[in-house]
Length: 84
Image 1 (cartoon, rainbow, N blue to C red):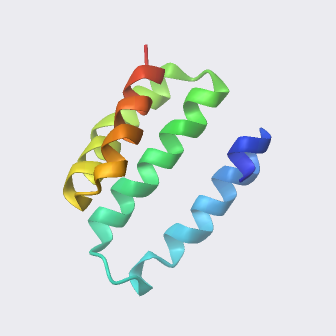
Image 2: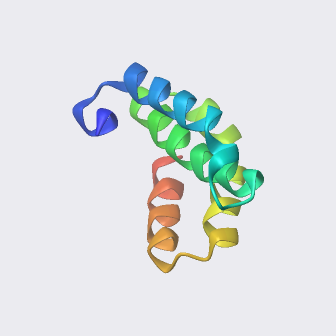
């Protein structure tokens, strides 16, 4: 929601909070970390920080494929398109 509103700093803060709670989820922490990396990548793209976005790309894509979410594949492709 913050990202869509252009509240990039608040979006990052929300991910920070989620990350501290990742150990409470049913998914293994590495998968959660990779999925969070995908959201951070989207924030970096919105900031225009392509270099920082590229650094997050391996984890973001790995998270989509590891999780096995077919909808996530479209999101992964969208992320790739945003990193020129």
